[in-house]
Amino acid sequence: MEKFLTSFWKSITKLADKMADNADVILLSLISIILIIVASKIVIVISNGIIRRTVKRKKRKKPNSLTAKKSETIATLIQSVIRYAVYFFATATILGQLGLGITAGSILATAGIGGVALGLGAQGLIKDVLSGFFLLFENQFAVGDYVQILGQTGTVEAVTVRTTQIRAFTGELVIFPNGSIDKVINYTRGNIIVPLLIYVAIGQDTEAAIEVLTDCVREYAEQNQEVVESPEITGVNNINENGIELRAILHVMPMSQWKVERELKAKIYSAFKEKGIEAPYPKRVVIDNR
Image (cartoon, rainbow, N blue to C red; front, top):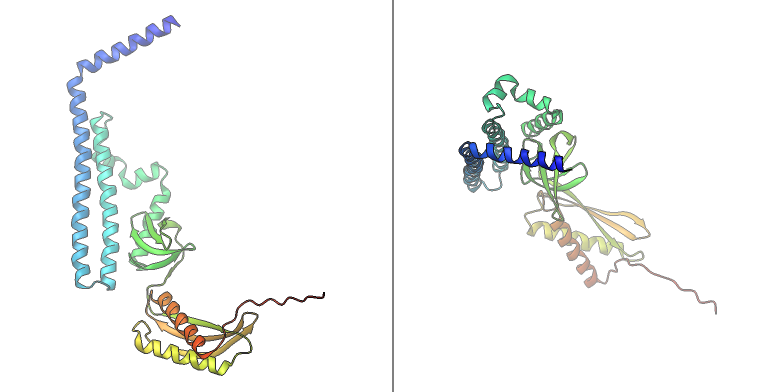
């Protein structure tokens, strides 16, 4: 044990002496590494600021246009590419400063970026990048679109080189590798059909209920620009244990379907109450054999 401690102490002393002899070189290397890291952060911050200002100028001209959405989507992609490129060259330069004999030039010359990716076993990276390119090229969705991806619904927040990020209605940020996206449902492109279902209790005056439904829906359509076509009143759609199901079909602007459905249901049931038309509710029959 004593021999081991003596040997260990000699090794520590020898290392300390060597570091003292090369203190100026070590200090210079540390300063260089810190400067490289700071410079990388500055480049990323400046480039992100320039990109964001450019996108804001375009959005001010046409705030809700498809062009504005495309520019925001491309901006997030460019930010991602710049970030990866800066980190790659910064890492290569730091490795060179550490004396490992690796520089950005030697990596690119001897292996190439594709070879490095394959050498690291990052074949999935290539799949994600290519899939992301085709998602953007085919314009399947853009930043700000409300979509469903792999069963998860939310608003697209960013599209990067590797991933797509969507914000769920309840606030969670969900991140998908682009290579895993095989189906996208986009709720933002084109008008939305709202099948409005209204129930009245069995035994009520169905004709009167349909008349109230028709008046409410048509009045709402005339007063709200979210409804883009004349509504269709189909009348009685079904009769079951829930009551008599009445249906109306409306064509509305994207992302307004929930608002239209909520407001119309409140309006219709309020009118039912005024006309004495009863909505269905659970009923219980108690038989007392005493």
